Length: 144
Ligand code: FES
Image 1 (spheres, rainbow, N blue to C red):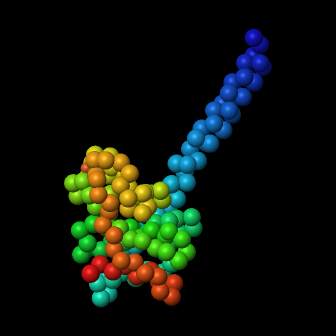
Image 2: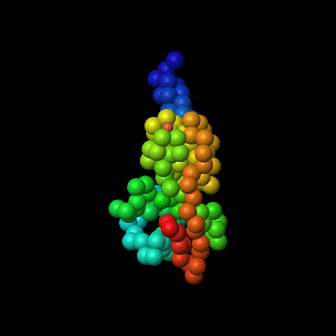
């Protein structure tokens, strides 16, 4: 085999591997969309955040506050429906990781979807949900 032919085959294989690798990564990259984390002050036992807090293509905003034992994930189900969940695993109270496709527990591997529904044991209960309403482009999360 001459050197040019070997070089052509090597370059072609590298290109194909790159294309295949990118297509395999697309679902993963989609869940890597940035997630906004806000430090908010509660007012009257509620957190209030503007709908613009959801960065483009992001379905989740995380609320943190020193009074919360666990952060809260606010999920944009659609432009008029939002839901909020405590980021505490229902198996053994571990904090949950967040992506735009759901929540995961690094302790024993449970997964939850964006509706707080448990998908993977050992957790068997869905996530605690907070009452959440949309009013004048503000999402109100009640923690009372
Ligand atoms: S504490 Fe989360 S799966 Fe066990």
